[in-house]
Length: 329
Image (cartoon, one colour):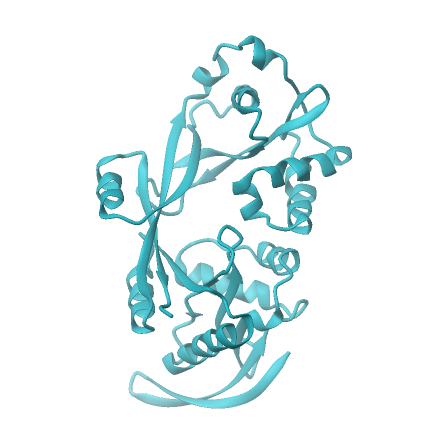
């Protein structure tokens, strides 16, 4: 979906160049996701995946007007900005920083950002428009400066509480009578509907995969294709699901450390099922030869006060991960 072209002037090393730019909204099947992922990875220093971008647009049923792109005449993407609703906070929309290559003029970046803000205010009427900035990245400072220049004000911080577990220790945890009352097995496509139900019973996982379509896409293409997934059952009903995976941390104080992460969801009324899940995951990871890697369990929370910031500086298990800016009414 193209908009009218525009000529923009910029100077590089003292020489004036003229760019004819093409402005577009989101449209699937045009290769925009691949170029978007490439720009984000190059500029932010953090990984992005084109398939995940496609999944989110489709699964969340995002409006095509919620993403703006700038391309050159030869169809090279040089900048984009996007917005999406925040499932965890009804009435709130998150707007991204205008990610752009060095050759994209600053006025072009600001144009697509300002136009997206106007569209949100005039069409969506969100209660809150917010921008999130992750700490410890190559663009942290310039992103903060950008949002401040756009009259956004600091609202709160996002923290990550993490604890590392030793696989041998976890595999030897005592199995209580309640824990042994649960069964464990591999999940298959026959279990898909029940697994989706468990995922949407977990508030955090529901925020990550807010729609049934999005949860189904992840489960069919990632979870169920991995023969190390785990289902924990009580009387034949699935009450907890999990999938361990290796990854190298790309940001924060432990950048470069390789860990075992765990994607999991558990019904609230079955806390012992989650402990059983950890034991089964630890045993599986030991069989795979991952004994030298920590099993890291993390959770997110927001803090408004300076006490939270100071506490994170003193407590190694709490990381001040990101700051949230909001646009005043």
